[in-house]
Amino acid sequence: MSDINHGDEGVQACGTERQDETAGVDSVAISTPDIPAEGEVRGAVVFFSSASENTARFIRNCHLEHEGINVYRIPLHRRGGSLNIREPYILVVPTYGGGSPDKAVPTQVRLFLNDRANRNGIRGVIASGNTNFGEAFCMAGDLVSKKCKVPFLYYFELMGTKEDEEKVRKGVPEFFANIKKQQQA
Ligand SMILES: Cc1cc2nc3c(=O)[nH]c(=O)nc-3n(C[C@H](O)[C@H](O)[C@H](O)COP(=O)(O)O)c2cc1C
Image (tube, rainbow, N blue to C red; front, top):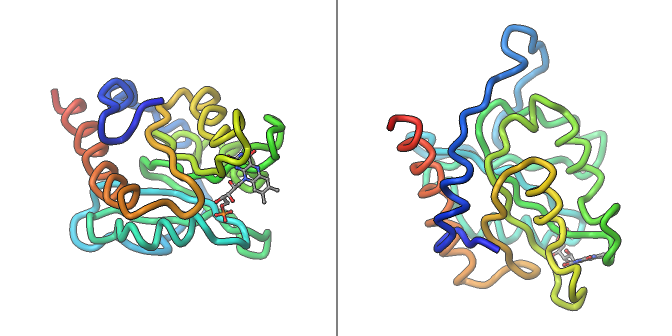
C-alpha cells in the first residue's frame, strides 16, 4: 500500500487529467465546504463518518483548512441532502461490513461515487478501519482504489494518531501540488 509520505508511485499515478463530462449540463447545486480552506485553495478532501465520528474527529484534528484544503462531509442521513463536488478531491472513507467486500464501502459513500460528476473529481483515497478485522482492515481503500482507478494513499486506525494527523496534514497539500506540477509539465 502506498503511503502519502512515501508513496511516490501513487502520487504520480494520479496525475491524470480528467474530462468534466458534465460540463454544460450540470444543473445541480454545487456544495459548499463544511470546513472551507483558509487562503488560497490547494485541494479538497471529502470524508464520510458514521455516528461513532472517528473519521470526523481525525479530519478535524488534521486542520486541513489551514493548509488550503476545502473539507466536505458526505451526509450520514438523506435529510442532510446530497453532496455535489466539482473540484478534485481525496476521499477519506472508514471501512464497514465486518469483512464482507459488498458492504465494506458505506452505502452513503457508494451513492456519492455512483454520481459520475462526483466520481470525476476523485484523485486518491485514504481509508480507516480497525485492525481487529484482520485481513479486512481498511478494505474500503482497496475497493475504492480499484473501482475508481486512483491510488490508495494512506490508512489509519480508528481516529488515527498524532503521527497520522501530521502525515495527512502535510501529505494532502503535497499530493495536490504534485498534480499541479504534472499538469504544468
Ligand atoms: C459494524 C462494523 C463493521 C466494521 N467493519 C470493519 C471492517 O471490515 N474492516 C475494518 O478495517 N474496520 C471495520 N470497522 C471499524 C470501522 O472502520 C472503524 O470503527 C472506523 O473508525 C469507523 O469510522 P467512523 O466512526 O468515522 O464511522 C467496522 C466497524 C463497525 C461498527
